[in-house]
Structure formats: structure tokens, C-alpha cells
Length: 569
Image (cartoon, rainbow, N blue to C red; front, side, top):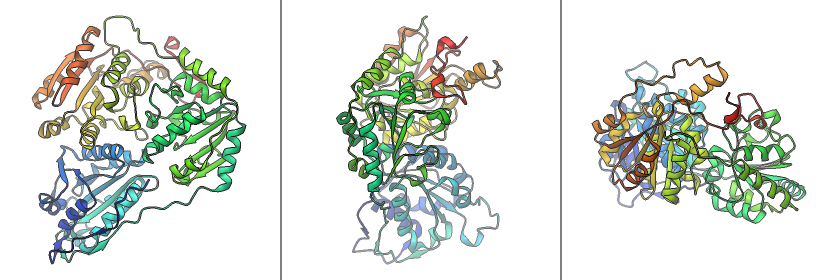
């Protein structure tokens, strides 16, 4: 994906000199950055002195991790690099979880950190950490800027690298003396976007041969589709070919949840029809996915009868976990445009998998008067419609969202996939709402994850960001408790959160509208109140602490060995 602006030229009429900090702000404005998420401190203070006169809006979060998560969500929504800003030492290290999250989910991000002045680097100076070295395994590229005149080119390069090829985070470390020094602004600078070679003709030919010969072909859709802005192309490809599809957690919404070809999510908590189709197919067409272990289960038994066509932008993924009979490596759009997806007679196969989808469709008739979270989430997403955007923490609620919410596009489902970071939901909702103000953004959180970045209620209040929070509270670390129940003989170690605070009162203390529900007959009214709220609002939803997520592939097992609720006993 290449979304770099045209080569940039600084204005004809320029001041004679600019500080490095002013050049940071000037360059962000010239790159079209409209929103920066950050938190100030000593080593980045010159940039904060300059940022008040810049074109980019600054959002003051209440923890640097939240800045990174908000920038991550901004990048997922827009396809442009989200920007986060922090000081040296603890400010920079607090970004690391968010940087890792963007790296593992291939999200474009530019993280700008202050650093101690160059004469003090390597001396264990106050608030000095080697953030360059610490983040090397979790970034696409890192830059330490040594001269103020290099700042525009460094930032231009950072954005080009973050946004092109397989997207990801780039770190730019700015020593304080470089921010304070002055120079004549460079007149011209640009970032060179990554240019990928065309897909190999022999790989295209082999892919087409396999597709034409297949009797049970299946698309395996991954998060790279959204990152490549290839959603509409994939939808046309699926509809014209008639080949059914499954999706990873990151690809939900590439096909609308109710699309006739969509069998659902595959993997550990995937739909039974999706996992069965993968196990029975004779050709798996993998598009922008990486054979993640949560998707494949026991890899040796994953899609055991299938030849593999693997279409991806990253050559490192080809053959990394599964041999590809036709490895098609290039820009995703170029690869998809080059392949003729023309299968033979597959009507019987399509009929079989469609019937399985209907047979194994979720049921929502849970007994009792308590709130059944899957039913609430399904109703909420359908009631809101195509403007619905969900951001999640990690846990049971995350899987219920993936299984039961209706998504009309991949940008409607923002979740921490590869890293599985609790605390992602609320700050991600802030980034999503600022990236797409007309969307109805819901932070769907668990009581454990919500408390990891609960301070961002203050950010919602300060900027009156109308995020709607659905807090599913089972007074447990639910997914850990479920695993302890099933795989650790019911030894419930450190999962009890029954001493949670009164979340409604906590929200009120932050100046946020809030209310609570605990009965099923309260759900419709709660959804209406959430939808009609003009500002930020929190719905505290009490749910059964013993409810589990089904289906479930046990660890180390094949996806064919899914457990259902009836197997619980």
C-alpha cells in the first residue's frame, strides 16, 4: 500500500532559520497529519513548545500507551500512519506495547520520541533509555536524527516506510539538542515509497491452474486485505468466482457478515462451518494472511487435503509456516488483478458449505432473565447498522464481538490480534472516532481490560469525544477463568475481580454519562440510550461470570476437534 503524498516542497517564502522542533511541526503539517496523540515531558518539550502553532491537532492522552493505541486505530481506519508523541525514558517505554501491537497487526504508525541531548547519550542520563535498541524487533525501521536539517527527510522517510509495502510502525528518536538547534529549512525533500516487483508470471500461471482444477476451493481472507485497501477488489473476486470464504479475526468485514459466500471466522473461537470447510477443502487460496496459530490450530493437521495458493505482500511469509504450491508475492492489488479466479464446477461444494453454515448458526435463546452478551452484541450491531465501529479489549468479550457482531467493512472491527493487548479498546475508540467522526464508535470492553486504560475517560471528557462504551462486567478475567475451568482442573488462580469498583460512579467522577443494566428486558432501552447519546456514555452491563465462549479449539488440537457448549461437562 502506498499512500505517500506527492514530493513535498517547502514554501517559496521561508524564514531564514527554524529550530528542529519547528521543523517537526512544519513537516507533520506538510505531510497532512491532522491528529497527533501524545504526552509531554522534558526531552520532547521543544516540540511541544512549537506544536501550539502547528497545523496538526494534538490530543493529550493520560498515558503514553493510550497514545500508541489511539494512533494504531487511526491508522487502521484511514490507511495513513497514525502519529504518537512521547518524551524519553518512561514516556518512550510506555509506547512500546502499542508499537508492538501495530507491528504484529501490520498497522502504519510513526512514533516520535524525545531523547536526551547527544552529548549525554550513553551516560545513563536522567530519563535516558535506548528506545532505538529496545524497539528494533518491533518496528519496520528506526531513525535517530542527528542534525535539525535532516528532520524533514527523516519524517518523510518514516511515513513512506510505515505506509508502503507491508505497513508497520517506524520510530523516530529526536535528541533534545537537535530539537533546539536551528538551521535553514531544506527546500525540497521527499519520502520514497516502497516499490514492489510485479508478481511472477509462473506463480500466476500455477495459481490459475490450481483454481481451475479445484473441486472444493476456499478463500482464506486475512488482515492484509484491508491494509492494502483491496476490500472492494476481493468482494468482486468472491462474487464473480462463486468461491466461498472464511476470514481471520483481522479480516472480519472484508465480506459483510451476512454475505452469502461468508462462512465466518476460522480458528480457535471460529465458526464450526468455517473450520469444517477449511478441513475439507482441496484448495486454500490465502489472501493477505500469515497462518497465525490462533487461526490454524495444530498446523500439521490444518487444511490437510488442500493445495495452497498464497497471495501476500511479504516474501518472508511465503513458506514460513506452510508450503505454498503457488506463492504469489507482490502488492496485493497487483496480484489479485493478475489472477483469473475461474474455478470449475463447484456448485455441490458451495451448497454443502452453505448448508453447514445454516446448520451450525449460533443460537441466542439462552435461558433465564440475565443478559446474554452474544445476543446483546448482535442486536446492537444490527440496530446501529453500517455506521457501527467496534473497538475491543482482549478476552471473552472480544471473541463474542468477532463471532456475533455484524460488520459491513473491515474498518468497523478494530481489535488487538497478534499481540492480544488488554487495554486496547478505549484508547482505540478515541483514535477511531477522531479518524472517522461520522461513525458510531463503540468501545466494547471487559472489566479487566477496561481498568488498564480507564484514565482515558478523562480524554473523552476533555475533548467531548462521543464514544459509546459497553462494559461487559462478569467480575472475572473471563477467558483466563474459562481456560482454568477446562484445562487446569478448575484451579481458579487470580481471576476473581469481584472487588471491581462501581463503574457507573467512576464514570460520573470523570464527568461521563453512565448507567447500568443487569436484566434482559433492559437491553433494548440501553441500546436506544447509547445510540441517542450526544456525548461520551458508558453502559455497565452485568453478565454471568460462568458464561464461556463457544466453540473452542483446545490448545494443541486440530480445528476439527472443536468443543461445543454441550461438551463442557
